[in-house]
Length: 305
Image (cartoon, rainbow, N blue to C red; front, side, top):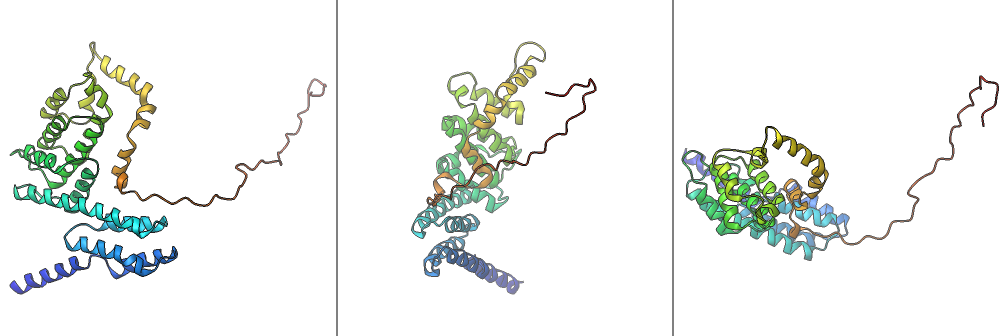
């Protein structure tokens, strides 16, 4: 058993020591060569990704950023600082998640937790806020996971983008984690609160009341259902409101929320250099071969105008 354990440890160490396979390296070098880049220019970027893997950090997002930059023809000197910034956030994510683990928080999907927490830091969450979320989420009824903590931190960062005070937002998200909100529900909570940020700021809605709803176990669209006087009036007004504002709210979803699906971050973007103008070409091709309709005979005996 000891021999088997030692062998497994050595295999794991070798895997961390070289997180990038030979095939991955060759593929990226070929991508750079297609852009006229020498391997000596690309290898330092790959070494940086490899060192991050040695420290136990996920490398997929870093590797994708290298591919993105090379595909766009961005100089390696501009890709390098972006990689360093992303690596720094992953290290901070690793730090706070390990702290939560020592306090008894379940691990869950570690890689997803690290990447989501790094995104939370990119969007404005702080280590102190995450530590407070971890403290608030401790509850005997529901044992939160690191993945849920990371999703809660990202949801809090989204709320702060909607000018929600950190203290109130942290308390709300912490209550959601304690009530067993799933990761997707915590992210949805952050987006919905951000969308209604002006309502909370101007007193048309109450974060305290929303927190009380969460503490009662309410989830999803029930949290934001408007209660109006009269039977069914709330549902009717909600339908009318959705009809009037549907397209506006859909387009009003903050464009930064689209990063939730792509995993990117505004500060991590590598701008595409300007390309030469394309040759002018007609936008439309007019068809001149119109098929004429045959004239129908006029039963009255008179020709058609």
